[in-house]
Length: 292
Image (cartoon, rainbow, N blue to C red; front, side, top):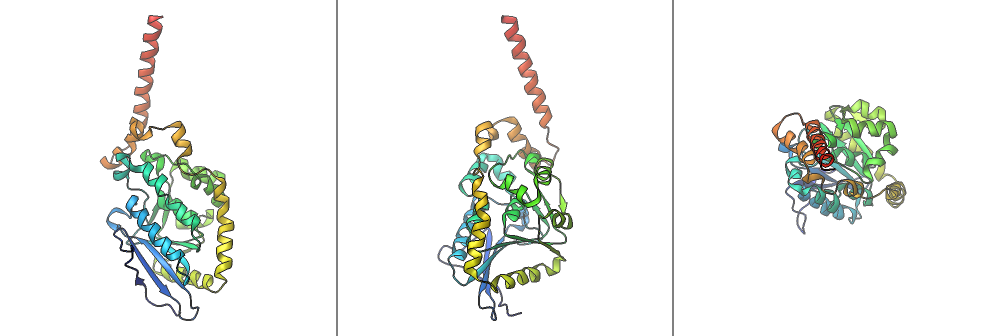
């Protein structure tokens, strides 16, 4: 119904390697939409600093384009994405990724409504980015979940407690602490997504939601989005808690074990590390008591 084809946006700092940035317009409704798609299908669309830096430039352009009424975030290939690149994070770059370029902040400060169009895996950073979006439309093959504790990647900041606003406190703790996977239908029942459709209908369904947004006042949508998103400002920003309790997390054995196990495709041995720490403490206590 009246949509032009997607047109790739390029030039003026908008030539990208890790995302695809496109726009299209609606002939009857006059406005248009932008789409930011993760473009690393060979690595399940994992994110690095470069990915989020490119996202920032695309979001900046879309938010300053008066013809754009909504922004769609999607994934090229079979999956929406599986979060930060663990291979890359284990080299100590995780703090820079989450503190310098927090991708969820792009959603929060966007003046235009943001829709996550999810297919396949939607895990880790991609999952909490999707639930921070204004709307999430899922294909029936989508899988949602967090993986942080599985790969020794701690997370704190507004997007962790914000999930309680989306699915409730018990479900939020279940998702973050147990790292379970949820089907698209389970996610809909939890309130994690707005709608579930067959995979082949995903783009058409997102178009329908965008058409509804284009039919109403864009200025009012900007105000409403800011009003809804301001509750996130009541939470602490990124890295506050982990930096206090574990300032050297990624330099200690447990911090390194998750990423190493993931890379080596084996089960993490977290409790072996704790056992060695306990043995070391017991040894030091015995030595101290012996000297006393």
